[in-house]
Image 1 (cartoon, rainbow, N blue to C red):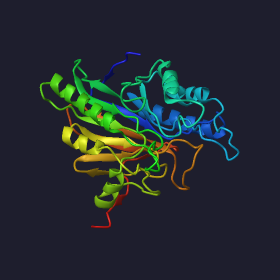
Image 2: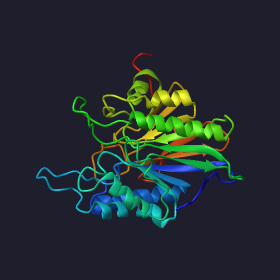
Image 3: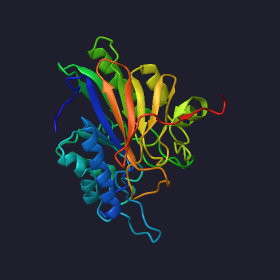
Length: 318
């Protein structure tokens, strides 16, 4: 679909981030996830919805059987809330979306069948599926006023010497730099404010928690890759991305600012996966303001309440 993203007449653009839904089979827990998404969308009336990975859960039971018998059907059910409300949406894949019985290309082919998605396969000559950038146009003109970068952070390391999770690779970083430079060139050197979405947190998410004042909760280890290809450094050099948003760690929801870039966790949305008692499911809401290099963000929880001010965390070094 060729739907354009555009700031509203009041100069705002609102995004809802759903992450780690882990939809399996439409059972009771999946329906709780659906009810939460309906609540959030109806309350926030977003201009765009971003799914930051692990929308479905294609892992296996201990006996080897798949947790999700029909990944295509599960995916359709998971995103139907947004489709039925005719809201433009995007997606970046997580490590569990294509763990078994479906590939990233196959799942993106299904994504592209939906009417309101703006997601794309992205370049075939770089790592991953679903590396793309979306401009947000001005309220009163057809000029880009902000950019949304979407990157596939992969699943599991393909290097035998590096255990654990995958990472945003060198050719993806070069693609991002190229896209950033092209947009600067179109605008005679003007740098548009941008945000970036991916599933697996960068190592800098641990750095910011350890070194800077943060806001929110860190209830589990930051499950980033053991190595990286310099995406954070590239964002610093390009000076356009003002904030990043990830998922993956279900009971972390904090944010902090490192060298001028805010690093945000989403709030885990899905009930059909692990969580923590007293830590409700929810979603992160992001509001951009046209012409300004800043944003607002808050959490909307499964009981309908919002958290505008998350608890402050002082680093141990302070």
